[in-house]
Length: 211
Image (cartoon, rainbow, N blue to C red; front, side, top):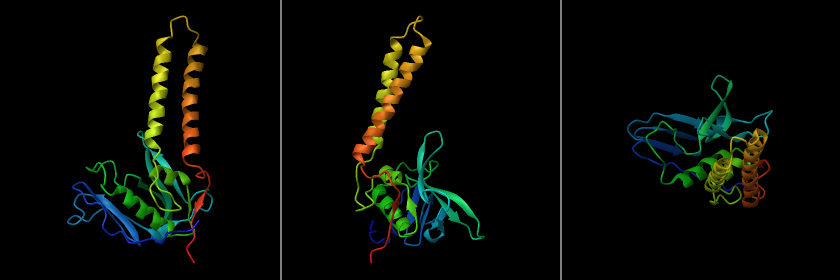
C-alpha cells in the first residue's frame, strides 16, 4: 500500500472550548483558547512505538461506558520507558466544552497521514472504518455508526415487541432463547453490513513510502 505524502496541517480547529494543531512533527490538543492558553497534550510522531508482541501497533479501542472510539498506541517516554497512549477519534476529550470541529474530517486525515508516515507501523483497519477514511486514497468514505445504531435500535425494538407477547406461563428457556436469538441476528446483520460495505478491511494495514 502506497503512502500519500504527509503534509503540514498547522491550522486546525479553534473553537471556544477546544483546539488542536497537527504538524509533521506532532499533534497537540487541549481545551480553552488555543492562542492565549496554549496548554494541552502533545504527542510526537517519532515517539510512537512499534508493538513487538501485538498484531497492531496502532489500534482502535472503545473506552468508557459510552464506548468512545479512540486511537491507541505505544509511546516512548523521555526516560526510555513505554506507556500506552490514546487519542480520541472525535479529536477532543469529553470534558471539553466543544461538540465537534467543523473541519474534523480534514483533521483526521492529517492525523492519520502523519502517523502513517512512520512506515514501520501496522494499523488496525477498524481505525479507518470508524474514521470513514480510505487508506489507499485518503478520501472520505461512509461511516458505519449510523447504520449500526439503526440495527441496534431495531434489535431493541424487536426485543420489546417480543416481550409484549410474554405471559406468566411462558417458559423461561423460551424467553431467554428468544432474546438471544434477536440480539444474535442483530450482531449478524452488523457483521454482514461491515463485510459488504468495507471489503478488504479485514487485514493489517501497513504503509510504505513512495520511491
